[in-house]
Image 1 (cartoon, rainbow, N blue to C red):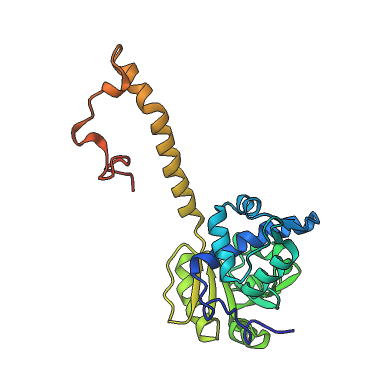
Image 2: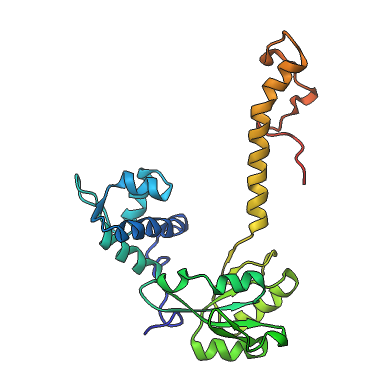
Length: 260
């Protein structure tokens, strides 16, 4: 079976925009769900709604794949699953190593979706000698001293970093030196990598902070007019005079001073 080291996706050489590449997994997830329900065809509107995009964007994305559907019929679900899987490189085996087997690393190791999506966890690696040999998700944890040989012996080109922030860059440097060319980073830090190495960052705290921002705005929009009216009986909320500077940012809808 081919490994990730010798076969890489052709998206860049075919000129598919990165924004389209980022949406392909969303389409594949929706299509896989349809396939599991034995749905033979799907319209662009139905698939776009399931993937959370608009149908015009979906049709444009699929045009890069050379897939235009059939008027009045839609897209063939099984063919699109194959087509997108091939474009993403998921029709081959991609061995992956996970470095840092704490709570998060162990949870990733136990995630059952890797195998069904073309990824095989080749090894679990941790710097703690006490972890060496302990089974996690059916695999014995290996010590970081073996990192280079593990990558070489398994032809690994994708590494997952789930270490504390302070150790992430050192681990990253070792992965790159050993031949890793793609990294999924869960550590709360920005990694420095040479040209030719792709890094995708997953930071749960940042995502929560963005959600907190939106919750704050929604709460302000809901309570602002009512609070103003309550503070000034008989004065319509719209007539309330704004504070100095309007309490707004340059766009007029965002507070000028936001908490750090």
